[in-house]
Image (tube, rainbow, N blue to C red):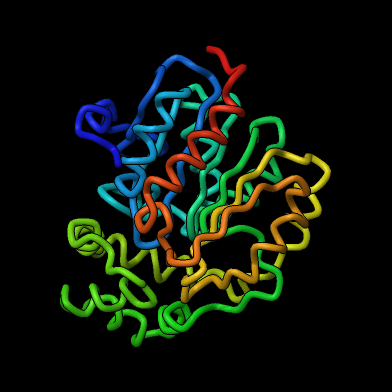
Length: 288
């Protein structure tokens, strides 16, 4: 587990880029132009990564932030909650933070947002860690995504009480997620986040569309990849793990039989060791 002294090494600051103000968490050297970039999913925030971020900072520069619409971010009305919109924001953030090459650590929607960005920006894409996400051949939206895509019903589904949110988040969990983790996500589920969720899911009719093109663009790059999957995930089945080698031929895999959709929360020590070890090898030659 991450002790308090290590966790205290994570720094926080607010940053405004193209009208989006977000909280950036960082660990490790601030002046390195290569580093690990952690991208949360739905309904998370940069805070999801605090424990892993602290550990990653011991081997190099590590960054996470609240992506537009999530956490404590503030977003202009003109922001596009689409794959392209999140990709453009990623590019702007990396430019502002001075990150020339990014080792992506992706979870949930973070993978849907950033794998297309990686395919379009091979010169800036160094490696990837995939946590219950990746290329999605043949995948169809899960039950909650279909609800969010439905007008009126989707809006109503995101306004329930805290108790209902806890039950939903813990669906499929062998062990309930920590109360503080779930309650933080519920507190962050404000009007802006609800708008971001509905707008993004309604912008993507078929989550498998384009995945073959993304995999085809990534495959010849042959970037180092670590795939970690909680096998009890009710949203993204573990059968998708094999497909990740269509994009990353040398991918290492770690299957966690008793973990769900948030393996870095269910098995923090195992995932922390695997991610830190992988990043240590990738960042060994990084310099400012």
